[in-house]
Length: 154
Ligand SMILES: [Mg+2]
Image (tube, rainbow, N blue to C red; front, side, top):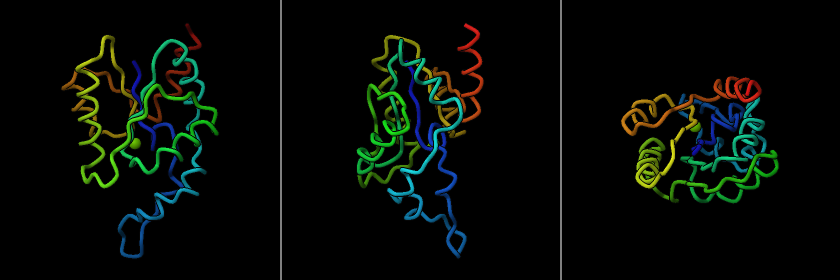
């Protein structure tokens, strides 16, 4: 089973990252729907996910809030990415960090999983958490090219 994050993992959101004059991160700019829809897919991610989802379920797990569900689904379809088996998003108003939210969902999935689980994520903080759960973590976005080459060697 493949679990995959979205921002910084499949979606290249570098163009939405901006600092305010006082040096703090501009969240309003980062979450603007018109800018989210302009995210590009990281190279090789589309090919790898399309190939893997022929045989394996793909679960998307993101710290984005629920209010971004329809824009997220629309973006996936527009980019030609496979539709996820399930899309987990943080409840609106949930003040936990993305890491805390992802940890909770991963632990729930692991509890019921009947097959090996791999998690593709760009967040280094998730490495020790995945190790604790016995999940293989694949670090994005650099892993896509490696997986692409591997798939084409098979
Ligand atoms: Mg991310």
